[in-house]
Length: 333
Image (cartoon, rainbow, N blue to C red; front, side, top):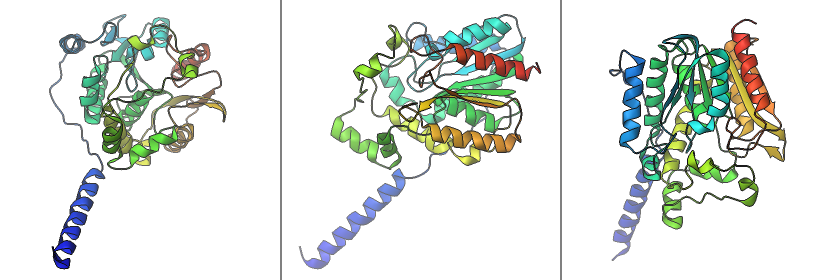
């Protein structure tokens, strides 16, 4: 092969490589498409339960409706986090629902509560569509709808609130995932890295369950989170972060907001979601809301990334107390 032909093939490979990189680097896109939803929440709920049953959802991982009346003055819509299910928050939320006799719906995000293959197949767009559907339907449950989001569910809830502030009377966030706390997580932001990791490490994700981490959980934890995951599942998380965790979203959050996060000191803080990014996002909520006195940003020194579950060891009493105080501020008391 002469020099001219070699140069041609090198140039061709370079162009193909750059095209592939730019294809990988393209920003994820999503727009909610209006579609038919049931006129009755009970019909919607039964449809969702049937979907979960068809997918062989694990026991107590399916959707859940706590109902006190056809429609209550106050209602909660709860959205769980990445790899989790309603067990991430129902310990606290069930008590809150009982206190206020408030209808409460626990959404099961697509790909969650079933198996790791479903988890890897779910797209970030599936999460957002399921969340918007649930928010639209939740209007039938209460006159005042409080959206509660934990971890990735907090990011989804933030985006939903920015899109439809008219449907969200208040937003309660616990450890919302806006960015990775582990330094290694930032590698996922580089186009093509996830595919490279899959090629190097194989399809399974290393869960890195250290002895220190195992001391923080109680028996039953693995019944509500995936004990095993596929690397591909991280793509939907990164796409969601890339799409929704930005100032254009944060500045549109106008309803009253409570944001709780785990922080004691530099050595003891949230190890999954980046605290400084939570604070930056909240500051932008505040700029939109013009310092609404019902808002509150709360550091929980005795918390963990997951603060509302009986299966994670932390002090849930102040978490419940802050949620109760937030509801009382909403009620003008």
